[in-house]
Image (cartoon, rainbow, N blue to C red; front, side, top):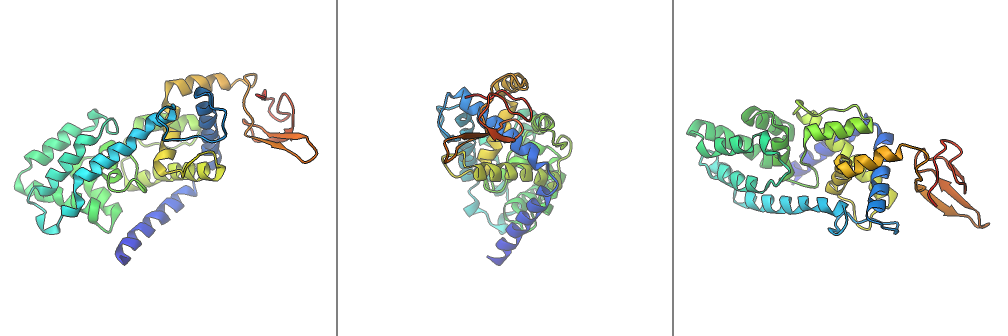
Length: 296
């Protein structure tokens, strides 16, 4: 139990340290923008949103929970034993799990090749592959396990990330580097993933999503507890063509934007917090700080 605690504690320490260097304000602005878009698109007048409501736009991302459940179950981790390394059993379990990637691993990122390696490996390579996979799911040094997986199977980021994701969805995430590079660039984060498949880069990615999770939780905009996967969806939504078109339109301060906050004071007056710049002001048609037209 202490060993498990130590590696999980180490993971959280790394994520915390990675979070120190990220642009938190840029993440907050982006999350606020996504929430506004979701409310407008779904014609939802309520203050709370639900990431798991499949009748809503953002609920379409909830399939990732099903992917995890099916792939994690197929791993049959309770049947793994260190003595079976090299027998082919571990390769078989992982092969079964990889049948449930859905679109979380783009096929061009080596899934067929990976499955072929596992299926057709000669005894010496099979031993090496299964040692690597065992370290991913049961090793005490996750950084070393990540490096071993890259050494064995190549720096195919979506593939390696998926192997970790189906281990523990509370700590790890799937990724699509090219798409997230585009998202992060639009957010102004100055962070790249493509051709940078490493533990430190992966942890920085998770730190960004973790901060989005913390901000969503703190903001109280969700009707349920916000998971890491929910925050992943909130960031990923910025890749939707519908969002990008809407966002480009709302760059114009003359397009009405809902206030981030609307507070009615004891004397009956109303104050707003601007949805664009966060400036607080008395009820007005426009924000006196940035000129944003207020949506009543």
